[in-house]
Length: 144
Image 1 (tube, rainbow, N blue to C red):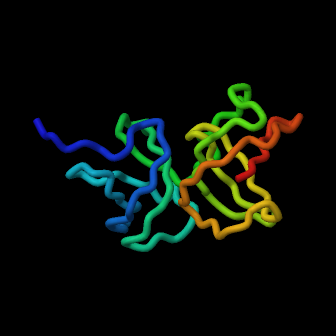
Image 2 (image 1 turned 45 degrees about the horizontal axis):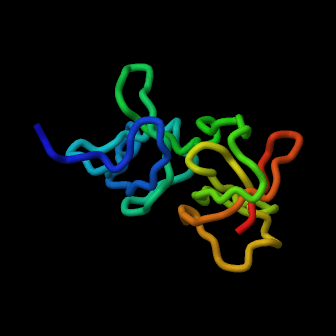
């Protein structure tokens, strides 16, 4: 039995390094001897060996652990756990015209508006933020 432990588990979002790109997809370092598979159909952009990307780990239809860069399809739509002014952990997953998309506590999606962010934010930054408000459509506005 190996004492090696994966840096991420099924059902989690993780920041992993691309270690190879093959005809079937990419492979990511997740701390185990066998690298984690990222199929081409689950990639959202061209990858470069050595770069870190954010993925979600899931079990595919063949029963093997795989990963996806299509993060939003794995996010929870239930915002009932959150309240205004609640302190939360954020993972920056992208930038839009409005601001920065962030995964809240590894579960839901929220947005930090550009006009309310006063320092540089980058893809894969992990920061602390707060729930500003939960809109009637269920979307969450965030603030630092």
